[in-house]
Each structure stands twice: as structure tokens, then as C-alpha cells.
Amino acid sequence: MGFMTGFEKVVRQNEPLAMHTWFQLGGPAEYFAEPESIEELAALAQRCHEEGVEARLLGQGSNILVRGEGVPGLVIHLSAPAFCGIQVEGHSLIAGGGALLGRTVTTAVHQGLAGLETLIGIPGTVGGALHGNAGTNSGNIGQWTLQATVMTSNGDIHQRGSDELVFGYRQSSLDDLVILDVRCELEKDNPHDLAQRMQKQWIIKKASQPMGHQCAGCVFKNPRGVSAGELIDNAGLKGTRVGGAVVSDRHANFIIAEPECSSQDVLRLIELVRGQVHDRLGIELELELEIW
Ligand code: EPU
Image (tube, rainbow, N blue to C red; front, side, top):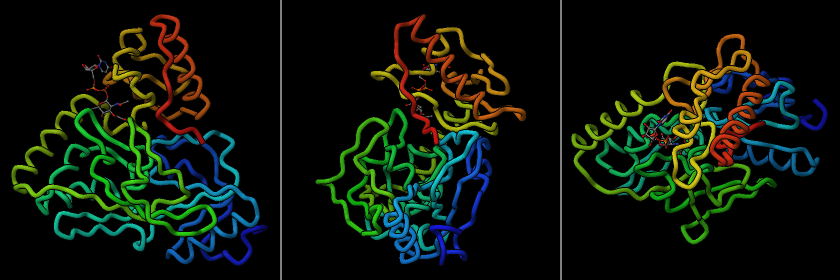
């Protein structure tokens, strides 16, 4: 177990990461841990810090592509109940970093709290959503967030209040090792109306984006408010293929991994799309997808 000696009960070696990501591609994590408690998580972080080993946090893997060679160091997954709670107190909703965003959104709606319903259909965890300020054209998680509890890479816990939280388009100031929990301040509304708004949003999403395929979210960020999907579509790239990776016909900012696809195919398709959009339209596309 090397530098992870003493953590045999929570740490696995050479864990395949493909099954932990939406793309279902890529190699293993050198070490992989699913801690049961905050104390156990802190001890793991401290050990990595002391040993100079990189630790990183994996959410639902819906915005990540793992390279074929896999990931060195420790990958942490917050699947234990201690990290996945969702509570409502008055106008506040407090969700664990490992809670699913979808479940958090529906909890808010059922409790008659408005704000998060525009996020329905976005995959991933609350921590992942906050880290990348997930959202749609009608709102993002950051705009409702008042406070976050984080764990730094040496295992310390801090509260980050609104004075420390800065959210931009698909980015946040939160770059600590772990987002432990998030407090959102929402608005009271009628649960029935909210549920209807949520359903409408869900139908629009289902109609405009690929579902039920092996893929992540949008691959590229929208440059200066222009739809990257529309640009890729205008460059004539829908259906373009490298090996088993294909630009979605439904929405050109999604890449579908067909059964024989490899991470390398997706990476080569990303470069091809980037190059073509640059050559044909003079626009440089920036990745939204994280490459591990
Ligand atoms: N369009 C095309 N061809 C395409 C895709 C889109 O012509 O292949 C056109 C649409 O017809 C529409 C316009 O582009 O007129 C905008 O499309 P859409 O409403 O799908 O929005 P988007 O800007 O492409 C953004 C987010 C999505 C989010 C949607 C809906 C980014 C990179 N994308 O897409 O977020 O779901 O708005 O609000 O910001 C994500 O970030 O992972 C993501 C999926």
C-alpha cells in the first residue's frame, strides 16, 4: 500500500475509473478512497499532504474524461451518507458536497423553495456543480449560494462566506480539495407551480440535448455568450467521428462515446473540432470538460 499504509480498509489500489465516469472511458486511479466520515477524509488528506502525493476529488464523473493511462495519486469519492445529506431550514437548503444535484433540486422544489429548479437535468454532485458553477442560460448554482464548507489539501476545514465566494460563467473561486457542504438561500414559492416550471425545463433539455448515451455534459465553454454547439454545427461538424467518438447530431457541443471508443478517440476528436472551428470561424474554443 506504500504511502497509504494504515488506510487499507478505505483505500483500493488500481481502481478502474471508467465505471465512475459518464464517458465510461480511461484508465485506473493509483489509489481510490471512499471515506466514511469527515475525520477519515481529513486523515487521508493529511497523509497525502505529508507524503507530497496528489489527491483529487471525483464527483459523479459527468464532466470528466480520464486519459487511458489513468491517474496517479489518490482519487477521493464522497459516496458515504456523511457527505450526501440534504436539509431544508426555512429559506435555506444545506446539501452535502457528495449529494446528487438532481435530488437537491427536487428536494427544494417539493419544499416550495424556488431558484434551483432551472438546474434540473444537470448531472453530477452538488460539490462538482459548485466547483464549476453549473448552470443553464437561465441561472446557475452560484447565484443562490451563501456559504460553503471546504476541506483544504492539508485536512483543515474552513467556512467560505459570500465575501470569499466569486462565481463566473462555469467557474468559481472554490479550488480547495473538497467542498463538504453548501448553503443556498432560496425563495418561497408554490410547490405546484415550481414543479411545473421544473418539468418544462426538463422537457426542453430532453429535446435539445442527447440523453441515454455514453457522454458527458457540454465539451466546450460558450465563447463570449455564443453557443459553442451552434458554432460547431455551423462549421458542419455534426456527426464527425474519430474512432468510436462522434459529435452528437442532437447538440454539437456533446461528444458521444460508442462502444468501441477510447479516451484517445475523444481527445483526438476534441482537437479536430477545435482546429476546424478555429480555421473556419476564427474562434478559439476552451474546454469545459476536465481532462484527468
Ligand atoms: N444550436 C445549434 N446547433 C447545435 C446546438 C445548438 O444550432 O448543435 C443552437 C440552438 O438551436 C440555439 C442555440 O444554439 O438556438 C443555443 O443552444 P442551447 O439552448 O442548447 O444552448 P447552448 O448555449 O448551446 C448552454 C449550456 C448548456 C445548457 C444550455 C441550456 C454551455 C457550454 N452550454 O448551451 O450547458 O444546458 O445552454 O441552458 O454553457 C453544460 O454546460 O455542460 C451544458 C450542457
